[in-house]
Length: 109
Image 1 (cartoon, rainbow, N blue to C red):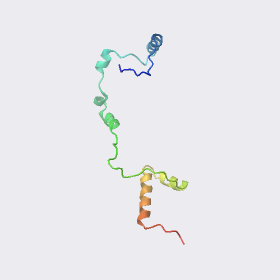
Image 2 (cartoon, rainbow, N blue to C red):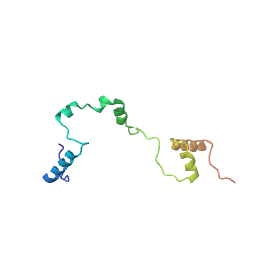
Image 3 (tube, rainbow, N blue to C red):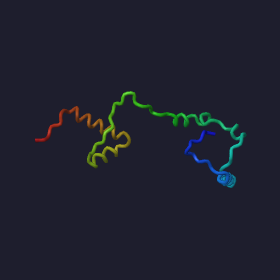
Image 4 (cartoon, rainbow, N blue to C red):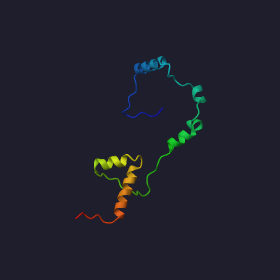
């Protein structure tokens, strides 16, 4: 059993008895026996693909290439890009990059 923190509260004997009585009345739950524990297998043996997928995590970027910013755009612009499904932020970024490649933005005369 893990060591309790000073802020943890243990149930009283009466509360513990009430909890155990509730468990006994619930047909969907039971206390595991030593035999139950002996028959158990790790999930990695039974469903390895699910365990592997759940364990995969994207690590921190070694050298972040993008900067998180907040930008305000007109609602129709946001609706247009969001409607293009996942990856809309990348497509918005590509559109801005194309605008930069066309040259400096000069105000209309």
